[in-house]
Structure formats: structure tokens, C-alpha cells
Image 1 (tube, one colour):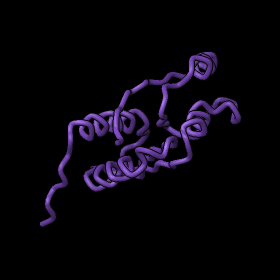
Image 2 (tube, rainbow, N blue to C red):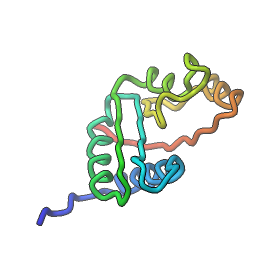
Image 3 (cartoon, rainbow, N blue to C red):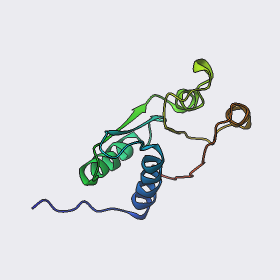
Image 4 (cartoon, rainbow, N blue to C red):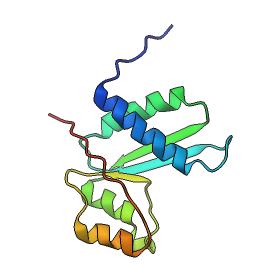
Length: 122
């Protein structure tokens, strides 16, 4: 028997947000559900650990990734200005909130987003 990993309040909150994203993006019951993110490097290990736990506990096939490529690039992939405003990532993580100019680009292209503030790191 493998002991359950300790899960903090921040981990629980993040798992709820990610679960919501998965529920929204799940199109069919037995297909692999994919959730991809990119952005700042600071929380990358945290995301990977959370994803491993969620994939192990998921009732449906689940594949989750996070690319630690920097805040600005992560935001660009989420907003998608170079791909006709089609997101290249389902979520992004950054050291600072999205700028009002990038947010305006999303709104102007009939896209929505949710800011979820998370404080982690040393």
C-alpha cells in the first residue's frame, strides 16, 4: 500500500481549479482528456506534482502537461496573438497578472479567462 501524499490547502485549491478546467474541456466520456499549460518556471515542479496526483486519481484517462517557458511566452501561448487568437495552452502561469492590453485582446476575440491568484515560492 502506497501512502497518500500530504496535500496542502494551496494544493487542494489548485486541484479544484484544474478539475474545473478539465470538466469544462472534456468533450466525451472515454476519450483522453488533455490539459496543457505554460508559463513561469517557479511553480513548474508544483504543477508536475499536482498533475501526477490528479492523473493517478482520475476516473477518466487524463494527460496534463506544463511547459516552464517563462511568463511572457506562457501568456502569449494562452492569448494566441500569433495563431489567430487560438490558444496554444489551456492555462498560463505568470509572475505578474495579465496586462490589460492582453486581456483586451482576449475580449476583442470573444475569449474569456479567469485569473486565479496563487502565491507559492520562497
